[in-house]
Image (cartoon, rainbow, N blue to C red; front, top):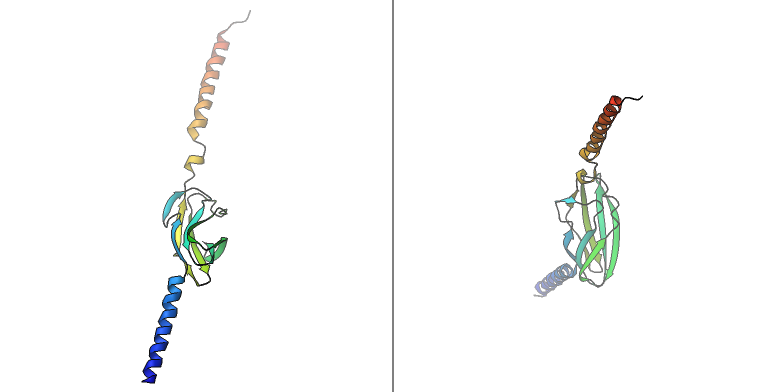
Length: 158
């Protein structure tokens, strides 16, 4: 009977530790830009809504060519649904490029990694010079000068 009591006590203690730490671990939701988002402006703010106990650190990570690197980290005290944002997103400077990122959070009870997320930046179309905006004034000027020189050629000087 003592053996069963010891096994039951160890099992209960293990379950309490496992469930207790899982319940107390920090959590993440509401990451932005959302996974798979398209037409995101270059250098976007990355945002996470985190909940944790005590001091919680949020790590914004980028996967550049297969290697994860930290973009930025923020520490908040006793977050309860706190929105954490990084504006240090100098890496997302290319047009029509898909970036892979994630958020890792940790506090004194544990840590959580978000799943990998991607976003794709906008096309450069809106920011390139429209050829018609350049060519129409050039063509107009050439036609005007042609008529002007033709008119001057018809004037007879005495």
